[in-house]
Image (cartoon, rainbow, N blue to C red; front, side):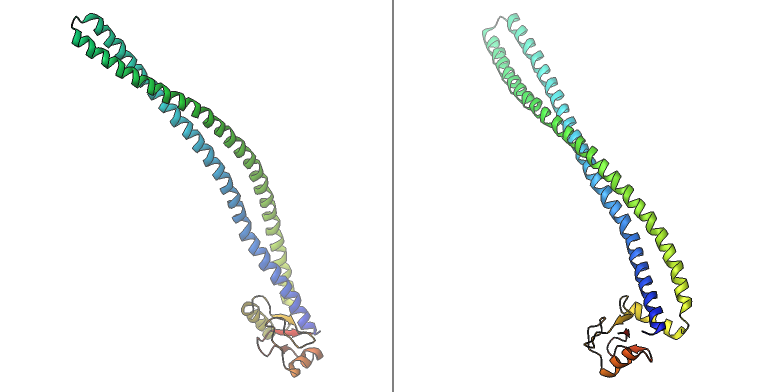
Length: 234
């Protein structure tokens, strides 16, 4: 293999490494955000559970007030019954007492249902708190690991870019270097590729001509794929 092709191949390996590192530097913060979103969902679930419990408690208190109001009304009506001397008025007041007592029974039944529901809602709060605590621990650990990886990749990227600068200086042919850069960007990071013994370019997977294959084999000059123009090596 020609020395300049070896240099380009080393440069390409470095560029591919830089590209991979830069992609990871974009992806790691996205993974951190995804972890935070999982935590946010559990936080929201706990807030919802507490809100549902609070709503239930308010409804119970309102029922207690309604029950108390009706019981006071019943006592007042009964006192009026004892005070009245008219049979029709006594009967009418008695009917009102019965109606209010029925309402009290219905409200107390509903109150019992809400109290039973409160027990279930307390259990849901407890489950949500446990889930949040577990997720919090996992997310904190994951974010810390991702941050450590992010810091390492930043250092590695800086070191790799420095190494690349050295590799670039080793390529004496500026035209060849320009060709490499153009092909690297055009051919999706595949500027310098192997040509197989079957004369297949491993970039575009098209068979090259015998002359191009012979040139790549001999190394007397830079060989380019007849189809995609990638720089070939055997």
